[in-house]
Amino acid sequence: MAKTWFITGASKGFGREWAEAALERGDRVAATARDLSTIEPLVAKYGDAVLPLQLDVNDHDADFAAVAQAHEHFGQLDVVVNNAGYGHFGMIEEISEAEARAQIETNLFGALWVTQAALPFLRAQGSGHILQVSSIGGISAFPNVGIYHASKWALEGFSQALAQEVAGFGINVTLIEPAGFSTDWAGPSSSTSAKLEAYDEVRERRQKQRSAMPVGDPHASAAAVLKLVDAENPPLRAFFGLSPLGIATADYESRLKSWNEWQWLAEEAHGTA
Image (cartoon, rainbow, N blue to C red):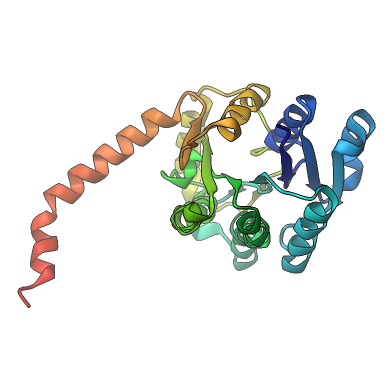
């Protein structure tokens, strides 16, 4: 049975690949972008199966209006994809207030508003699947992208809580956690803080680490995302790419080791009351 999708950030990258994959198999897509001209090729190829919507996810009221328009147009919503977002590069000391707020507004609040807008429709129909595009950076952290991590860790937190809140309504939530893919996440779509010379060596080490990581193919991710939305019992979290499992394993082993070594302090802090 054909599904109806609502995808933010459908102009390029994952959003575009997934929109095309859904449309190619006969699904319908409400495709949002800040620049509607980027959606025109989809409309030209797939016609009425595409609803193009101009949207800046930072606009709370526009998010609610766009979701409502998509539901009214298609009559249902089966898959809601919060894909719009970008990476901000900068050491914590380098990040300005405006840069920090902009990163959180888009990556966290944009996803929150779209999720809230969709939930009444999904609850009423007793079904639906919310896909939150997180990152391996949503469960681990690296230098020079600290505020990006803050946005994705927050997305992970509210989405894990959300999954428990809406399970009884027949709604699934999946956090997709990609590693590096050949999108323009670190290119034209990204932003960068003014650099402090003191961090040049840290920046250089991190760049060497990033260069050594395998890069994924966004086109290949489309088949994977279709399998997720078609799964009878989809997971809360799903890695995309070769490197996330190794990163997560090392990170969580380190956390458990540290927590266990310092459990005596936890118990002391608990007291005897």
